[in-house]
Length: 399
Image (cartoon, rainbow, N blue to C red):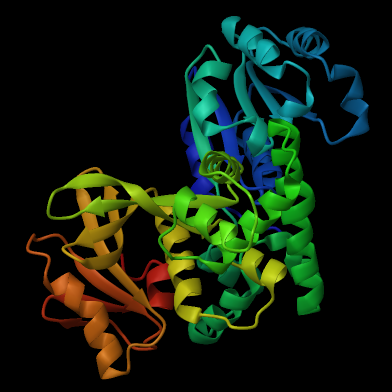
């Protein structure tokens, strides 16, 4: 398989070499966590002259004897070399029973620089503080961005490439298949056999039919406001007995596994977060194509999904903006920075353009405002609002 350097993530790992944190690489299945760990190993071998690396990949049968915490702890501890920088790299750490005991024990010795990856359902962001006694540093890995997609395929025409990226997405393992249907088969298999299987094992889900229905519903309602109660009502209308508490739990499980990201609402005028009705976006938009097919495609929603994930990839907190009775697609916040964003497929029609800029014009503060769309033009401004082409924005030409 062709590999590209994922500098954004690799630099984050390089910058924390030698810190006492337990470094945890998280992200949706098949997003490249293991390849990132291998790339980091190569960097350490090349750049750290006095390194000693203990690398364990639990996908490989030669490490089966370490699948309990005590043998793992004893094995790693025995590999320690005094006078060297000792690195521990463990892939798929959750396959080791009570793995946290081994990691905590090794961390307590203060002899090892520890880096781990694992299945998301078993290594949740919310659980890291309780799993590990030491401080953790989380590196969140996403499927390929549009920029990485361009780099992988060597595309020069960004406008043609964005059209292809909308169809092919960022699950790089699918790129090995020449036929689009075979690619979607691969992507659907990742979702069904890896992501959903992890969730089922972790949470011992009994009603898999409900989980499957919920997944289909969320995929079909990307960018729509959703709540556990509204889903319950939709399901009840077809005589399916469910309760909103179960649905709420299943929604959380799907987000824990990075299958979906929940985006909450933010009251712009009142400057407060709203607790009801959220939006859910897929970690990669092609999961929808792979599961539901490409009929009745709404390109505007797909672009909205792509922008939501890109904002998260760039480290923003992302919310849906609410101003009076109008909605702003995204309010992106990072420390003192705030951006208001509308996303559209085509704004060449005057009514569509007016619909997109109207909510932004009502915002009275001085933070930047922009419309991101497939304009195929250089950036221009309309009454202080930046109008930016989606390909340029994704490539970082326009921040």
